[in-house]
Image (tube, rainbow over all chains, first blue to last red; front, side, top):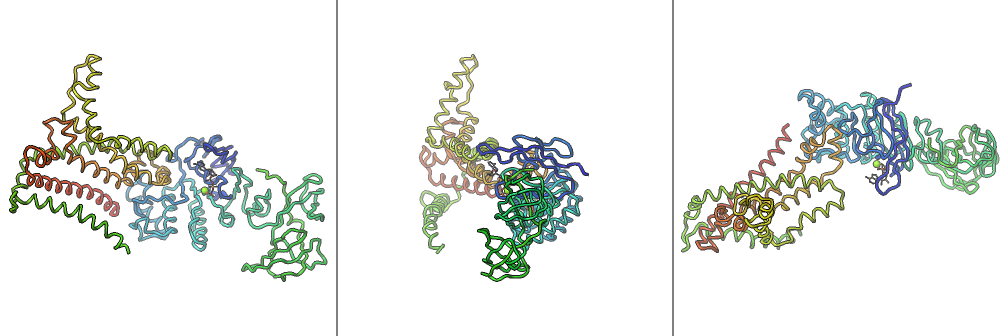
Length: 350
Length: 270
Ligand SMILES: Nc1ncnc2c1ncn2[C@@H]1O[C@H](COP(=O)(O)OP(=O)(O)OP(=O)(O)O)[C@@H](O)[C@H]1O
Ligand SMILES: [Mg+2]
């Protein structure tokens, strides 16, 4: 087991008037990991990143890197580089000089700078554009210059704040793969901020889901998707059917007054819970065989699958299937015990 | 459409800028009877020491303004937004007072029987001659024109994106390096316009030297004034001196702009 490379210990951040923006963040980041901070707008992702980068000091709590307390270390003394949300390239410098900036400050020799910057330009596919003014580049190109500028000094950690936010979908997908490859190749720890759950699922070794300045869940993409700890995480990651239920006893949950077998236990008896079932885990069967019966309300073709809503017991079930049902027909719904996720009602932070 | 909208301004410029320039040039190159002559231009050579003094004083005042105004503008630009506007208002406040009055006030402060010397005599120090010295003229120039340096500097600095400064720190610049490598190059337009807005009025001023410099610190402005309003009435010579002064200012400005340009060119070459 690796020991933590970056540690956030009980970080709290309050800005003058606001109530807490971060409320007790505990986070261990391992070396060479691709960690994504994921959460809705305003949940404190950027603030967390800025605390790691040294641009904000936490109101309470400590930041450690390699076991050393760096809470009050200014950014220029940290071996951490940042790709800013709006790139923040130097407008008075051209492409080459922007990338070379950090090396020059560190006093690297001219020849070494040339080799390394040229290598970077190659990597970001901007060879031959070194003398371009920054303003003459497209958003995607500026983005790549910003990444190259941060990587060329070989930091131990790269912080990226929604770096692909301004790009169109296709370019974004391409850059996602590229970033992931760069991270693997250079073996740098990436802390990546996004509010796009799909992006988080594709790129990360580990996802940290945040809401209201609190970490909701932290784990591998598969864990987060398959085992969300609360309704917020389930709702935020992928699409879900989230409903109220009662855990009547171990291995039995009641939804809409009907009892279902499940694989969870130790919730006590008759405990109100949130029940989550992923739409791809719900099957449409003939209504005669099913405990839950409803009427198909809509069918939308989504490319690979059909997305259908089935209204039953006053609840709109979301169902993904490769076979389309017909709108207005009766349908029964079925799911397997291990596809039922049971979680405590109040959001419980880890 | 654009052309039509610009027409009144072009007319304005023609009537109030271009035409007067030609009138000055006309007087500069003619005798009082209207015949062409280079006499007025040649005669300005006699006043070379005054030209040199004016250029020297104005340059020194400009440099002092820049040295004081730059850190001040930087500090103001990094204050919180609502404090910024208050600070700028305080900077502008003296300008709401009449220029003559402001300069006159310095007479009573630094005069031989002025406030400073009174205070000094109270603690038993001999009075110091401050009024009617070249130092007093430069003090007056700095005091009167420094808002024109602070304003353009502040305007440019306030526009520099905070995240660009953070990026500099992120890439290893300490505070001093950030200012040297990022703030100064990015505030170059403000520096240029600040220099222009202080140097040009300072080199042609006559009130300040008259009120604070006594008779031994005559500037070009005083010289020109004397040709039009003073005892040695000679508008043709006055126009000649004005013309030469204008050329000098143009050359200086072109030179300053050249420094800025070469700075940018260097950037492309590296
Ligand atoms: N300098 C500041 N002063 C006051 N409040 C701030 C400051 N910076 C951030 N906040 C507040 O902190 C909260 C969290 O901000 P943060 O930028 O961390 O959110 P985020 O998760 O990055 O959101 P987004 O996805 O929109 O970028 C917001 O409510 C914001 O208004
Ligand atoms: Mg943000």
